[in-house]
Image 1 (cartoon, rainbow, N blue to C red):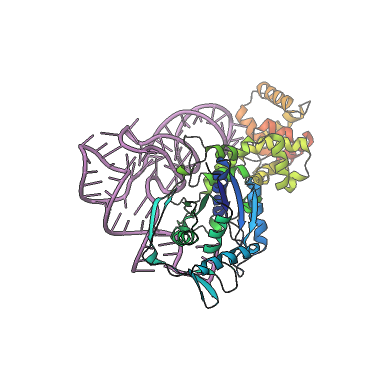
Image 2: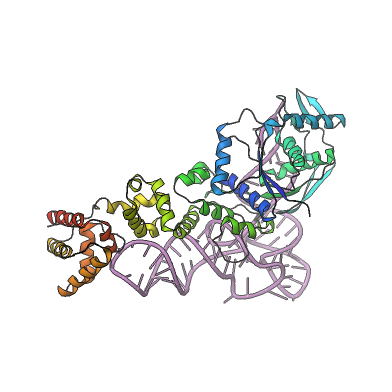
Length: 415
RNA sequence: GGCGCCAUCGUCUAACGGUUAGGACACUACCCUUUCAAGGUGGUAAUCGGGGUUCGAUUCCCCGUGGCGCUGCCA
């Protein structure tokens, strides 16, 4: 069997959004699932729209997700190849000059068809195709020309790209015929849509994976989420690592219709992957996302993370839920009498560790014949806020003196 | 306008002629629980419409409708 060689060919006209990167993901999965080669090809043939920084953004986006490429090419460095093949066409009488550009001569009446790995048999008539430009007057090739020449040159076996290219594929087929080359397999995948069913816009997820990473989303979650937007594995399993996706991937299970970007689902994936992180790993990740966490010592930070990790959606959520461990919440204090009792109970605790705190307070509740829920509620309101992680463990995060001074503060404020 | 692609719960999807149309997110009820989460168990919710083919259509064919794409010396 021929070797599978696949390419992701973005044009560097801006930061690639999540939909572009999903195409890259599918290309990567297709290549690696067949033990093939994954090529990155920068299609920088439009000099007007070229944004130099976007090349790095493309590379960084792939790297952060682990989509490592085997080879990289830039079309702007391959001009002589296109020139050579243009001459070939022109010698055959299939290209002609027009206002400084070169056009391919389309033979009318021809039937162009291919078997798309997603769509099945697709047919066009050459009648609807105009003589199209292959080399622009500035000497750079058009997409149609450059991609066909390069795909052949690099022995690309499968062209997996967005389905906006379906209508252009007949042009590409014409070129393959003109050169007497065998066309690759075509796989056209639908674009991701926004919640309004329109093309993904900036506010609805057309952001780059780099931005999602900055917001505290995990690469594993992004990969899993993106893979499932237009593809599904056999069973009901939902959580897949990149390696698992690679061994499971098959183009047959790629979808025909356009999926809609759904942030809720991404959030769910992110929570799931966050839950899988080891405490040590999570700690170092959280440090990158929070100033407060950065200056906190390991042991205490680990305690806090352990208490709030279940409610974090992204890494950036550390600040959102850890506030009560740095500063008391705004909640109104409990009644004075109850707060005094709480203070008394806390003062009796001899060793300030989680276990002793719990034993000692439970003992106090029993001896004073208190309602346990009510007492814990009082503690929560006096020391923290109305929502907290388990109260005894939370108390252990603070110093005893801090707890007492917070309660005293509450007593002062209480009626 | 022409050409093309697409159509299952609100969303992501399963089904490859026969299922009580399955799973997940979201929503919701209950359980667990001092609170908020997390977790557990249930629930609401879908085959765009009309014709065929067939003993039988979500599934195959045609028409319509709707959405999207292309129709650039942009990709």
